[in-house]
Structures are given as structure tokens and as C-alpha cells.
Image 1 (cartoon, rainbow, N blue to C red):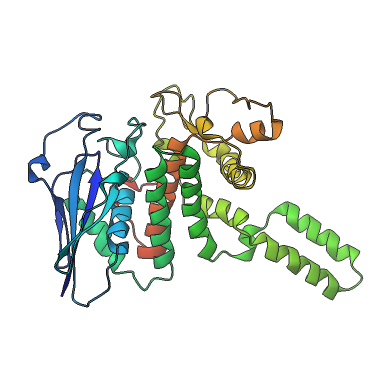
Image 2: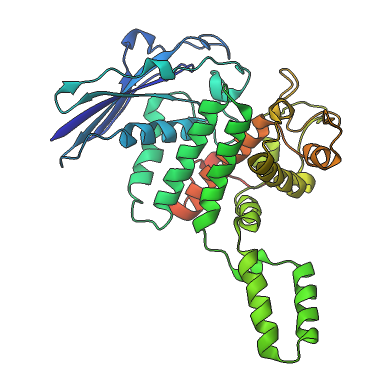
Length: 355
């Protein structure tokens, strides 16, 4: 039997503990395991430390992946960032967790770093509630999307890790989470086409003297269509519903700064365009991602101005959502992907009524 112990931390205050035959999640300092009601920001800058104890019947080599994987799924399920500090105990030997990984939290208004309960896919900050999600996940380890989903969840936690370090890097990790899902998801060919493509394909058929030459050319373009760009948009569209807009971080009654369903296609396109522009040119855009103070707007108020008056970049920026909405969107897509493609059932039934 092998026993591993990993350390995690969070600025969010959790109660309870999770325990089954092979896994235990609990407070390292039990005095912090308090059921007291607290404000959003109380204890927000105090680190709470948690221990993940994992027992295996089979011997495996020293491995950090298990602890980081659990930290990633905790982050996704609760919508709260968990620092993964490393391994503490492994098969009789002690190790010092890497306390340097603890990050200073700059954007405490974001719900991933304070005690507020998420509006979409809500979960009270009690480790007991993790059992339903995690037990369903482990039963699906033969599912064809299981490994893909785990990788995407890892990207989600990494995005939260870099949220307070580099907004551009955080943005890229959020995009990577969706790209990972899209890369292995099986789409119907017709789903990745649109009417404009069919019009041009018909023109190709009219131009070529033989059907064989026409179809070879059309197949070439069809294969290009199956690039990640179109898959990225389609995987999001498949896994969102009205709750994405109703429960976004922007809860202003006047609706100013909110993204609507009518605008979501332009928003998704701008996310991927900005991803490509940043990776290919290094164009800095972190400040454009920030909401206005504690307003938590989904999209920029007014039209952002590029310092060099670059019109191409400005056209992307005017539809680019804030990092708060991007995090909300990615978490929603991941959890709905989990429900639809992994467990084929809903685990937040009371919150899943279509509007």
C-alpha cells in the first residue's frame, strides 16, 4: 500500500472534509474548519491550508500529478482557485511543499478568489459536496473524453494561477482549456460548415470539368475546415445555454456591460482572434481584459483605444470580453461538457431548468 499526502491552499474558507476509501481532503489546521457565516472578502487574503491524502493499493513511482489533478478538479467544481503546493509525504518520506507557489491575490473581487458562491453551477464551500462530482468522475475513467476533460480542467486551474501574475498568460490558458476539448471532440462534418461555404463549393463544382476534380478540391477545403478555429467556436456553442448570460459575473440591474446571446458569436470570434494575434505578434492586451473596478462588466464599457491607433486590434478589442466573463464561460463549458459527454446526466438538477 502506498500513501501520498499533498498540500493545497486557498484564499477561500471551506468547511467540512471529504473522505472515501482511498482519498481524504481536510484542513491542515482544524481550527479554521468553522461554519461561521462570513462576508465575501473576510479572510480573503489569509491562506487556508488543506491536505489531500491519497492511498493506493498498487505501488507507483513518486508522482505529483495526482495532487495537482485533485487541485484542478476542486478549482473547477467550486469555481475557486486552489494553489497546489506539492507533495508532503510519500511512502514513508517527508518532503517540503513549495510555499513559494503561494501567489499574491490582486483581483479579490473576482469570485474565484473570495468566499462568494458561484451563480452558475453553484456549490457551497464545503468539502462534503465534492463527493458527488468526484465519484461520478472516477466511474468514467474509460470514457473516450475522460483524459481530454482532465487536461482541460488542468488548463483551467493554471489560468486561475496566472490570473494574478499575467493576464495575457491566464487568457491563453483559458483558451487552451477550450481548445483541448475541441481537439478531440467528434463533430459532424455538416456542423462545421455554413451557407457561405456551400455557395462556394457549388461554384467549384460548376468550374471544374469533372466531378472527380471538383470533389478533390472540395475535400481539401473540407479538411481545412476541421481546424481548431471552427471547432473552438462550435464546442462553446454546443455547451452553453441561457444560464451563461443570466448568471454571468455582471449582475447590474441596468444590464450595462452584459453580454447577450445575440452577441456571443462575435465575442467567441474575438477571443480566438486575440489568441492568435498575441501568440503571433506578442501584442499586449492585459489591461483590456480587466473589468471596470468592482463593476464586473462582461465586456468593456465604451470602445477601447489602441495606443498606436491600430484599427485591426481595436476591432478585436471592441468585442473582447473581460477576463471575468472568460473564466465564467470556460468553467461553464467544462462543467456542461462533463454532464453531457462524460456522465450523461445533470448533477445540479435544481439549477438546470432551461429558461
